[in-house]
Length: 414
Ligand SMILES: NC(=O)c1ccc[n+]([C@@H]2O[C@H](COP(=O)([O-])OP(=O)(O)OC[C@H]3O[C@@H](n4cnc5c(N)ncnc54)[C@H](O)[C@@H]3O)[C@@H](O)[C@H]2O)c1
Ligand SMILES: [Zn+2]
Image (cartoon, rainbow, N blue to C red):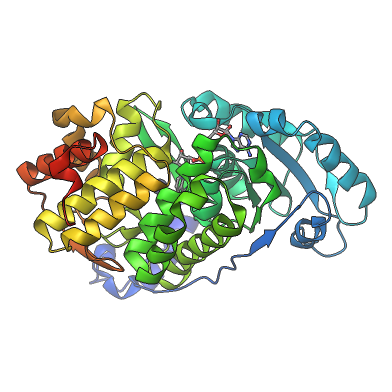
């Protein structure tokens, strides 16, 4: 009886002479799109006078007061001993705006948080124990590594909890904070495990940067150089003119550059037509095929921003050797990176056999054929699918010679 009930409806809709696998008119291809909203804010003191910016981002759903779980980068927590109490005060003074879903959580800072998959499991347990749901908020305060890891945990919990990022490094404010990617490292490969997820909001706060060590402060501007080289020659010229002041942490010069870099990255993501990297080119990864490999090869002794500075320098000289970038412009880029206080050489850069494996890893990460972005003119990009390895080796040697101050390299493009 049961079998008969199950089979009969099928029999009725299938004409006797048509077998089920021939019913092709049931197949459909439908294109659809989903609207996202990106919310980027700039403040001077988000946990003090500017707290309304954060409060306004924590929108309520219906008449429910939003529940919020805060995550803080361990080194940010140490550098700002009053941060946790400020957050607790903010919560107690604004009970009608949000409530704390749990204790404030602290997680390891820097690349360590991305190198241990068990830390993600711990984060998931905390999010579950606090009964967070899709209308709750995870607010993460930290460097790019912590944003990536906490963002990934939030992105896979309930298939996505609202994420508000408060980036605390120049790199994360100028670049990754507005990004739509989360990830951790696995199998000795950068960002192997991750997801695409648009953050609910991003607050770039000047005061949070004040405790950043000089090394990390300077790192972020390699991404600003990168995006300006791809998008706008005037933006590059502004960084070039301000490089020494930025290295000296003059915020009157540095802050507008951070704002502009974040905007250029955001425009690329929201207006570039490929936010989730379905196409073969990934222009924002200019200089990154080697940067990602150098980070892993140096056992993460090199910071992401430092590795990007080296990768940008190498691909800039290569662009000059192979793709017509005028030598004088390549020289301007090297000088700017140097004036920003960034070193452009590291012993692992010369382990070229292993380094070139980075090309294949870069290809695999996106799939399809190898596509690298090069820069034939500052402000213009070019997609290429092959690499002339002897010329790339030449570029690497050249950058190292430039860093050593060798006369021939110093007079290049002069
Ligand atoms: N998702 C993306 O689109 C994207 C884009 C670019 C980079 N990234 C990732 O970002 C990571 C690099 O991030 P980063 O450059 O911000 O470095 P980071 O997160 O490694 O931070 C550098 C160090 O500074 C500490 N720190 C952070 N803020 C501080 C502050 N205000 N005061 C004192 N110490 C502070 C951190 O704990 C860490 O030890 C890499 O893992 C990279 O892959 C992601
Ligand atoms: Zn980067």
